[in-house]
Length: 93
Image (cartoon, rainbow, N blue to C red):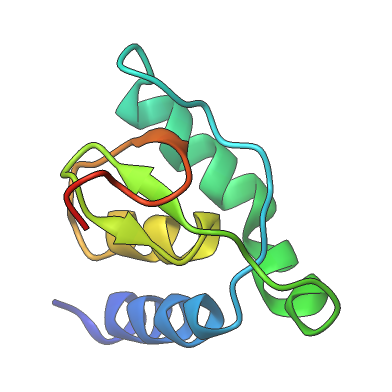
């Protein structure tokens, strides 16, 4: 992994700690590319709005409960191929 990519992953991971909600495509038909586009367009919200509004859990297609859209987006940047299934925790969590 080159240095600039490592810095991006680190920055996104730090932002994910201060997660906030923003609309992501959801459901079984959600496409990975759509998720990536929405994450890129909304990544600034992860940084700025996070101090104002706490995030709600969401269920990912990997059946892992994420602490919000920013957390899920950070996993996309780490290379996971997941989408948002629905708002709320996954049933097996």
